[in-house]
Structures are given as structure tokens and as C-alpha cells.
Image (cartoon, rainbow, N blue to C red; front, side):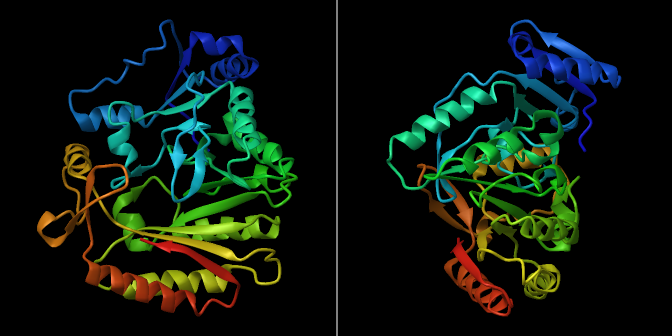
Length: 339
């Protein structure tokens, strides 16, 4: 469970029951709380980007979600469901390091009722059937779930919506409070996994692969549709052997009898933008991330900016490896995409 070093609460958040409850809870447990009069978070102390990053990762901001227009979320879903912003993890490659470079803290929202009402309106348009919402586009919501109960309420909300589905992905394992909810199979719980080499090198402050797979096993036994995000896939010495071992771990640990739906797989190779590279190297000066531009292909994406990606030949190797490895699973599965 994430225990912040300091909590900042927007003054307006105290107009909500959850805001008041969180203030009381943190003060009782001796966590310093500061009220933000103007909702501006200008607290990141530190002389270097690294110091500010480390400070931010230990901070929780309690606020009100004011922007209720949902962003699109291809290819994962139709819309983002903005339950949380930011993440307590310290993954060196994460795009949040760039998108939230001046705000590396986690922000939770006390007006989830407003967020879910907006989701209801998107569903009612009938534009998609079912309408799919992604709960972790800008965050990993699991570590702060004990404070927000946002996933719990979202799962129960979507359980009652015949024309909508909810999905979220996490690297964390504290999901026990979600296992006994009435979800009606409308929420897909996904787990981001990688080889132990990648986790040890780049995914700081996160559980090991085995722990994540064990959490997925619990979710399957609770009747949830479950998926795995294998990302980012890195090319390094013995990468093929390591990823095949990861798939073998899935084969060994996942239950076969309790599966109600095929396991889904989303496989994403490592890519980076020039902006992301510059910012990552400011925070992680000794990073060993493979970001040699000359060994990559520059490709423009759907959002109008370019990324450095693996070559077509390397992508063909990645595709071949995962199609081969996953074919040995003794359970139903579906590969959503390999990109």
C-alpha cells in the first residue's frame, strides 16, 4: 500500500465527503497535510530534476476533476476514464515521465460521481456498442485504491451497464478488495508484465513478474476477464529466452479450469520520442535504456509526432517469437495486437 510522505488537498475538495474523510485519515496517521488555497501545486523542492522527481513520487494530491470531456484511447478503448493521474512507480521508460514532467506526483479525484455520470452520457450516445472505457491511460490506479475506492465504484457502475465495458491495467498486486465485487464480467483486469531483467533494470518500485501473475490468477478465480500487457518489449542479449520464460511462467501459474473468457494479450515494443529521451536522461542520468537513434527507425504516429521504433526486421522477430511462445499456452487466448 502506498503511504505518501505528504498530502496536498485542494480547498474545493473539502466540499466533498471523500475529501474531508481523506484529510481526517491522513492526519490521524501522522501524514502531513497542506491545503491548497489556489489549487496550484508548486511544492516540488529540489535543485535538480532528479530531486524534484523523487519528491513528487512521494506526494499525493487530492483534488476535483474539472475537465470532464474524455479523451480517446486507441487502441485500448474508445475513451479514457480519468480516475487518477500519475503513478507511484518509477519506470524509466514511462511516457508519464514526459507528459507529467513537471508534475510527477499522483493526483486522485473526489468527484468520481461526476466522472461516472459523464461516462453514462457517452454510453447513451450509442456511438459504440459496447462503449469501452480505459481506466489507466494516465495512471496506475491500483496503488491509491485504498484511498479512493475509485476502481471499486467504477467496476460496480459498469456491472450495471449492458452496453459498456471497463478495463484497466496495473503493475501492482493489491487487488484483494476488488475480488468479491459483483462485476458481471464487464470489467477486464489487465496486468503489465515483463521479464525480470527489464523489471530489475527499469521498473523501479514495482512488484516482480511472478507476483503480478499471481495477482492475475486471483482475478481469474474471481471470474474477471483478464489480460496481459507485455510492454515494452526490449531487445537485449538473451531477450528471446527471457520472454519465452515469461510465457512459461504464465503457463505454469494461470488456472485452466476457472477461465470464463480467453486471456487477452497486448504486446508493445519499446519506442520513444526525442522529447521523452531528453527528459528521461535528465532524471535517470545513468540509464541503460536502449535509445541509440541510429539503431532505430523514425516513424510518424497517429497523433502527428514521430517516435523511434524498432526496424521492420526486428518487429518481425518480435511478432514471430510471441506468436510461437503463446501458441504453447494450454488455455484460450487472444492476441489483440503486436506493435
